[in-house]
Length: 301
Image (cartoon, rainbow, N blue to C red):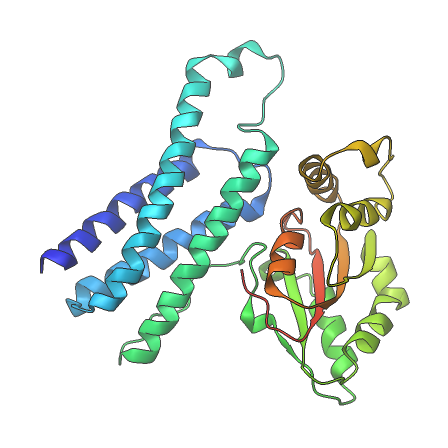
C-alpha cells in the first residue's frame, strides 16, 4: 500500500507540472506540445489503472517511478528557467515577442519528452498484455517519435507502392505530425527499389517542397549528412556552413525544415544508434512531413 501511495503521489505531482508547462510556455513547433499532451494522457491512464486495480505490481512501479522522476526533473528545470527569464523582464524589454527558449534547449526538451512518452507507451502495452483490463490507446499525434503502427510490412505485392504513397500523402488532421515509415526486412526484398520508385513519382515531387535521399554508410559522419540535407532545401542559402559545428548545423537544419513540408529517405540504416543521431534535427511542424527508413532493424525512439 505504501508503494502504491508513492507511485500515486509521484505521478500526480508530475501531472501538475506538465499541465503547468502547457499553460505557461509557448513552443516553437507543435510536435513538442503534442508530446506533452500525449505524456499527460498516458500518465492519467496508468494512474487510473494503479488506483482502480490497487496494483501491487512491484515490477511495474520499478519501471514507472524512474521514468516519472526523470520527467519531473527536466520539467522542473524547464519551468525554473522560464521563471528566471520572466523575472529578468526580457519579454517586456524587447519590442517583438521572444521565443521562450533557445532552439537547442527546446530540442533537448523535445528529445527527453519523446523518450519519456516512449517509456510510458511501453508500460501501457505491458499492462495491456498482462491484465484483463487493458489500457486504452490515448493521444493524438505521436510527434517525431517512431510509431510502430506506421511500420510498412514489406511484402512483395502489387499494392506495396500504393500503400507507401498513401502513407506519405495522407493529409488528414490526425496524420499531419511528422511520421517515420520504416521499410524493414532482413532479406533483399526490394526495400530500396520501392522507396526509390515512390521518391521519384511526380505526385510525390509536387507534394513535398523539399526532398532528400541519403545512402547511409556504416561509418557515416553526421556533419556530412547534415550538409547534404541542407543542400536540398530550396530556400536555403549556404554560406560558410562547412565551418559550422554539428550542433550549429543541426540547429540550422531544424529551423529551416520548420518552414517546408519535407520528405527525407535514409537508405540502409544499419543500427538504431545511427537513426537516433539522424532523427535529432528533424522538426515536427505538423505540416505532413515524412521520413522513410530502409533498414534490417526495427528503429525505436
